[in-house]
Length: 398
Image (tube, rainbow, N blue to C red):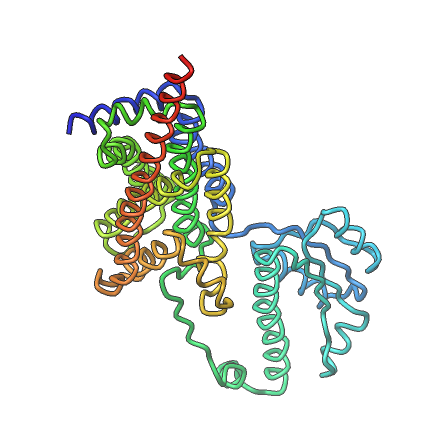
């Protein structure tokens, strides 16, 4: 226990004296989370800049334009004279979509002929593209319904009968878990843990390898009394304490500040964050034993963490991925954490339903400890043999 305490105290001193460690542990998580959360503070897209080209310039076309302006998600930035102007507006980055109302729009509509409004939609950004398409579809149906209702009433059909005809089949939409389609409620539960994972693993991935790179492994081994158990425990303690606190504090602050609901078990979600943090710490320490070059182990951690958000199934459906991608995703604690969190924290399910994911996170921590101890034992033997050979060589030379 004394040796573990010695190593832990030594590690705390290293953290306190290193700007890099302090930045990675404290400033980076807060600054990244603040930046991304602030960008998506409203949670719902508002005032997407669009352009309108009204060839018809009629009362009905102006009514349609009023529908565009009433959505809230779009703002008419420019009225252009031709479709050629629309292309320039897109290339200049001024707009994300454009509506073209054709000639004879009012005439064709009133005579019963189909009239098509062309929507040029910049789908390089899927979020804005989907929002424009979805809202345009909604208000165009409302507009068309209004036109048909007026025609029916002119033929003597009562408003109630006309509405029943127009709404012969209704869709009773019941969105689950995020009823307002709030983008912030979707983003933050995935963004916070993946940033935590990256910050934790990038830092812990160098705590052993840097000892070799800086020639201080012998000093570390001495502080641990030659025990790889004490070495691992002492190295892990500071990061477990700091990152467990961070894993609870950061989500708590951001969820409160941005009013993100946790409809499920708050206690279960908090315990899950702790388990996730522990898994990340020991996974990172395991990576740090792979090489004596701390730059190389940092690159391994970066390689594994960079695609974590995409491969986790959070952004793209997990079941739609090819086999190799699925296998790769299983190597990241975040993949298992986000599935468990959505079940416990968002879907209000019991802990039992998330048992496979909880078991996977626990296995990450335990297997990382076992493999780390094994590699540390081999590193220790090799180091002591090298030291012995060096001493024998010095004595012979003397």
